[in-house]
Length: 195
Image 1 (tube, helix red, strand yellow):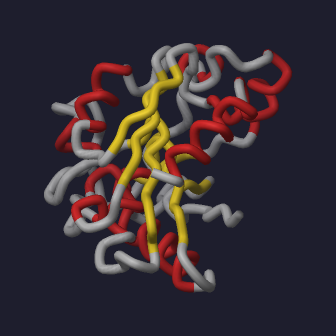
Image 2 (tube, one colour):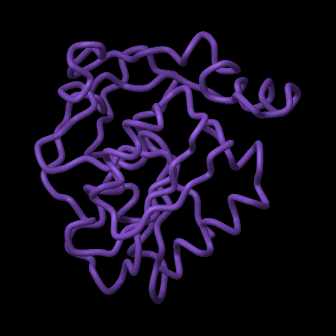
Image 3 (spheres, one colour):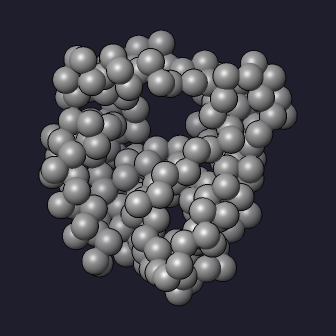
């Protein structure tokens, strides 16, 4: 298992890394792995994963979206937010001021506090840059809907999941089931990866 650190998540107040930088980091990680790859994308990570996986069908065997943005070509977080998110070429948005309520509902308080301490700002540029490719159009994809998610409502997840090859549900999961129900999530991810 490999985890990719996205350059757009940073403590620099004038952050200029964007979604394309994140996609490049994901693609480099994919290219560095021998054999077939299943890519798991969570939340914002769905956007750079969608961009990065175009043109690598065969190498990437499946994309699994976990309460993630499964957008289409031309979409960005900013244009899909209907004006609720800022745009820009530089600058950052600080982490959610109430992560326990929105990102970690259902997570043990101690685990939620530890996770919240690791949150950093996100660059405005990552919200502004639109997708130029959509890997899910040529690669099978699975969507895992988290029914109690307060960050990305289940209705929005289900609308995006209509693009996926198959859909799985975690009805009691908040936005971070890897912290609240890791064993159950592992079962669902394994099932999704197998198609």
